[in-house]
Length: 234
Ligand code: CA
Image 1 (spheres, rainbow, N blue to C red):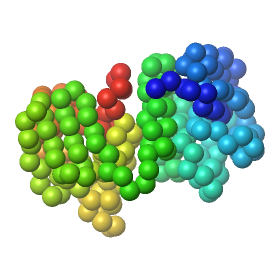
Image 2 (image 1 turned 120 degrees about the horizontal axis):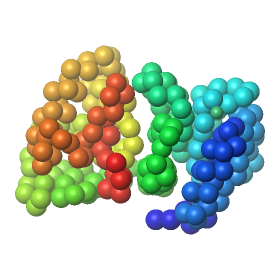
Image 3 (image 1 turned 45 degrees about the vertical axis):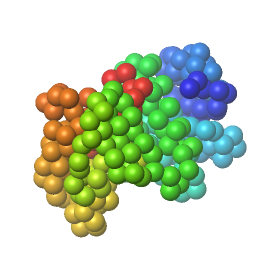
């Protein structure tokens, strides 16, 4: 799926980075509107109603996190953070504030485009419809509770299904550890990260061809998990 004229609000104060990202997006068929401050980001998000926001966090006037919070106060427009900040707590803070995904500079153009496609797909998928995940021989149909690996039926436990359902609904995107714990085990379970280690390891044995080198269910260290999108080059 190409950009198809969809509008991206690019929030970046570094001219060389803005030029680079713009050329990647335009070549892919996206329309691009550029701003370089948090203030203009919030103004233009309202004025132009972009399909997606690409957001740098280190902005001259205010922190990019405030842009995420400001947007989330009124819109679910996908926000993909592109930042030089590479600490786990910084990524968690951006995702917690409501960003859909997080890329660390420097990044590959193919990776940026893949993450944008995932964020746009999630924004477009109708609420309530249970998605099907299909990639490299793995097929998970959450609605029908059916899972196949290379054509072979795999049985999952009820709790495994709950974990898998959350991951499939966010396929391609990061699911924070504590969001997964809350969604599966309920409020108050956010600190029980050992549950996740046990269930993820069990799921990898069932879903991955080589559980020691997972292709589908990948760990984002210190942050959470990602069920890799079929077109993710990573
Ligand atoms: Ca910056």
